[in-house]
Image (cartoon, rainbow, N blue to C red):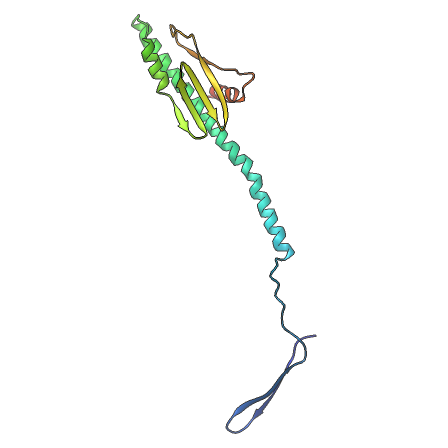
Length: 166
């Protein structure tokens, strides 16, 4: 039943007086401080969509790191190739110090992605995963290549697969 206000208003010559106001029904709206069901469903669906994107964002960072490491190793291989080619044409082998200096100059050092040369080893780290690349041959008499445990190490496999794609 709709709310009705019954007002008795008396008009006089000089004044406008409100005599009586009464309510026939209680029409006070009760406002709830809770959320409606549709609002809750909408918010839950929104959170679900946001949570679904988090793994892809995290894996994107890993993929970028693997790609960055692969590019850095490719650049290092190219520079070593140029160095050894130059010294082959000069009929003199490059000094071990120069080769190690070229290798050490290629480093990445960010919190979740790093490539560091230490003790004749390149160490690559990607979001907690780690692999070590060894130099072959150790004496650097010919152009060295970098080897890692391809079959047992995911970080090694991901980096080398990206190097082949480039």
